[in-house]
Length: 220
Image (cartoon, rainbow, N blue to C red; front, side):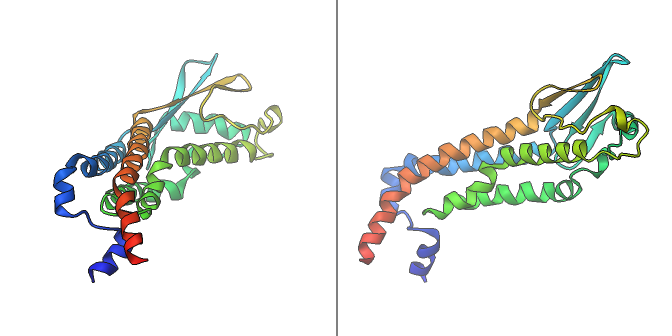
């Protein structure tokens, strides 16, 4: 049974080896645990904010995106968007917002699981969390493009605004409006988590690859 487990989870560290090189094996585990904690902390934090600035709105209008909701001047922005034929903001990323909390918890658990896997499968378990910030940005840009490029041609001011793609990471211009995006603390926590995972995978490989190689040679 033990050999079957090792085929999946990788070789176990002999007690004497662990005692002699405790830090070598603890470092990746601690990095993975810290990465998982940062992701969980990011759940209630805001991830992204978009501010609309125009002469008639000197203070600007803003919408803040969390992983499962949006807050801010949504009614006012939806009112403006209605005239150019853009759909209400609440229709964006409905599926993503529904599964996001469970998804991040699940991804965090995969990171913790990676700490107990001592072979290449650990990297596979960590990949979703490693690329989570990139996935968030790409998904957000997809929805911004989807809304901006699919305007209702029957809207009152549809003829005055051509289809557009609001940029997710830099300032854009739409008619008399400027859009000013900003990545917030939830996103940066996820970025720190990704950084810890990348470093953790480096130390994981350094610690366990010699054991994996030794295991492979023993089977030959």
